[in-house]
Image 1 (cartoon, rainbow, N blue to C red):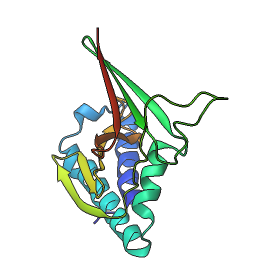
Image 2 (tube, rainbow, N blue to C red):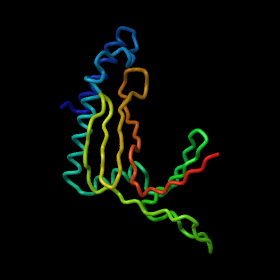
Image 3 (cartoon, rainbow, N blue to C red):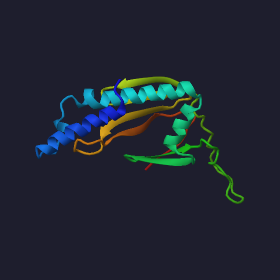
Image 4 (cartoon, helix red, strand yellow):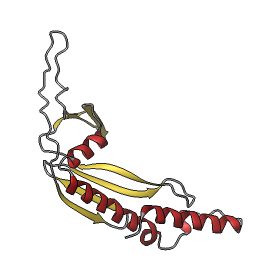
Length: 172
């Protein structure tokens, strides 16, 4: 397994070599970029997640809280002629009464994950982590710039949510 520092060092070397020739190297010009950069970085990421989980049982819940934030929230999704409202009530701060008015709908508390069920690769640039309690998150690595530079980052998506997630649909 390659270290992250070595991977980014390889990117810098490629940049410098091309700059000396007066050429700005683009990511699309790099042959085997998945094998050279994406896969080793995902390997390191997966190993680090597994190492952290083996040291502390709190890592799954802390990771989810880091990605979703410490504040409960409503997510509003508009798709075609439908609006969905989802209530992410992880800390029991949704449904709080306002003066003398109580909430009309009950938004149940979601359980944080307590363990990782599976870490699996999907293609050459994505890792999917499946947790207990219905949570699933994907981490897709991609370049942030068209220039070949140490600008790789994750596109993080919530792929699976607990079945107890509050969801309200309205068509219009």
